[in-house]
Image (tube, protein in one colour):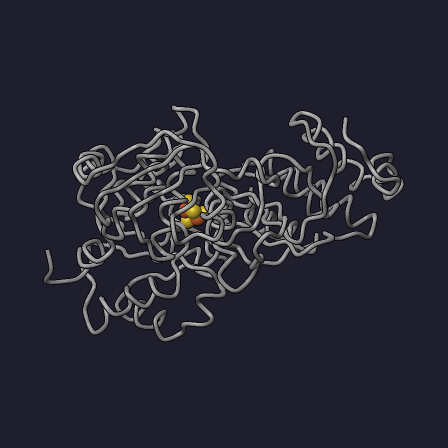
Length: 405
Ligand code: F3S
């Protein structure tokens, strides 16, 4: 059993109200299950479970109930807390073809979360400008792609929280100290060696391939050797590994902040060649002619957004194709010219949402993506039912341009 401070014991007994009590019950239960010795403070939280499509009526009720109790007790979240994407752009939902009934329920979820004091960030890339953890900081983030980025690229420390456990950390400012909060669990357990430098789009393929392969092998923390990924490539790699498997932390030799202390023992070495990745694409790319080209999973960075704007600047969109670019509000606000260029072309720059957590299946049957995570979720029968075209960003964007193939 965990050692709690007197204050924490009081919180668990309900001295600080019902909302805090419930949150403490969840966090301490998790701590006991995973053998934590104590609770530690977190500096920030990212909550998931925001899209009505992913949480449905049961989730909506749960969040509204929680929000009601917090309001009655006059409390809000205790630490900086940001929000994952919703099922629609809160302003452009009609242009997306989102049904009004869905939109109403989505707004109720959004309002319940904001009434708790959660920032209306609505992005899976809070680490762009909004919620930027420092090296070594303990945080409690849900959203597996953001967890991977925060752990691997920024050197912050978080487990892969679920929606309720992240919310509980937001309400208490605490998490149980186990898993990736501890030094010993941040060591690599396998070396992945590449003998070539992948082009940026191949990082999504590498992640899609390795997430499931490593998880099947029981490996949790890969250490990459022989590659020099840019930040956008690391984002794509981590998101895909976390989607097809349970990888929440990786290291890249000479690049990520903890690589120097990541390898203690002699580890198994796995070699990946170009052929293996090009073969793997065959399983991701279903070869369909996409009705929708959707970029921004995880939400596009400033450089990705600008690259798309460059590609479509002064060109005309094909009337039979839609182009969606998903970004955070923060990236949109800082890049009005790029947003305007893409919208002048006829594309839709969406904030607050993405192609996976919005109800695209109501409107489209086939989607073109450059994301290893989206390529994993979009075809699912129970989720988006899309036929996937997987191609590099440039090729996809040009598919939407009139006069291009
Ligand atoms: Fe983000 Fe949606 Fe992809 S939430 S990581 S853009 S599935």
